[in-house]
Image (cartoon, rainbow, N blue to C red):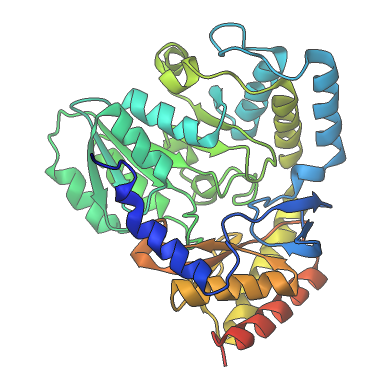
Length: 400
């Protein structure tokens, strides 16, 4: 009889071999206490957090927490229903209004997770006989949305404008086409050349969806993301985002100016058949989004942190994912998984938490230590982080 788990055997063996070296499991860390957006207690030790995507540090904002507590007292713990049944409370509408105001767009639709936002929008608007043209390094939720919608998937080389243009020219002129791009790619922290990519997409008659999960709140004059920063936000048909990064809570969304957008509420399965977010969550999200509209000082400080950490790691001799800092993500490339895991553990022992990212989630089978900075990291903490990387790197033999 076939064991349905046999397909996972190579991964099981790889994990067992890694743990046999004495390294702790880097994918089962428990935070015993969280003291602030930048500090937690891990394994009984106070630890600086550098792997949480809490870019704007909104998780402990007093106004955000108060809004959540008030909603919990007023509306209870959950909705126990879908948005199209009993699951739309006043808070859900207020959250969508905050998003429309933040992006200056006509429509906003809130999902229970960012993953579901991509899954729902892509699978609903691009179906059988349509084409989704996407960057090969796209997030899993984007690929899963394509698969669920049964559209033809056409991938092009990462951030390659010419490759995108060639793929588009080969497709039937009359076919429905959706180009899916990301503002910031989460593995290496690099940004997309959206201005040129959107131009060639529109020339080919394609609609454009941009996932701004890792840029919302931080990049752009108003924090609307890379499309705003490159002056092409008005040319984007759909912007997807998440509340689990800069907004500091959980949930996902899509904003759009498309005149027929509202029909998606009746035909988008991950929206129709999922319980809606709890009232406390949408209250925290709406409050956070409105505060992010006035976050220019925080954005400036986050850029300072990103530039300092990137420069310092480069000077120490680490190989980084980008030549210059392009976002709040800085990827430190490791020689292999074994030394990557050892480096991750050495940093944790120093009192620093980062993300260990490994194949197949990473591009080109790389092992990465992914650092995501926060606007609440102080300049002193950034210097501490560099000292920890120096000590751990020499200890493991990643730098001399």
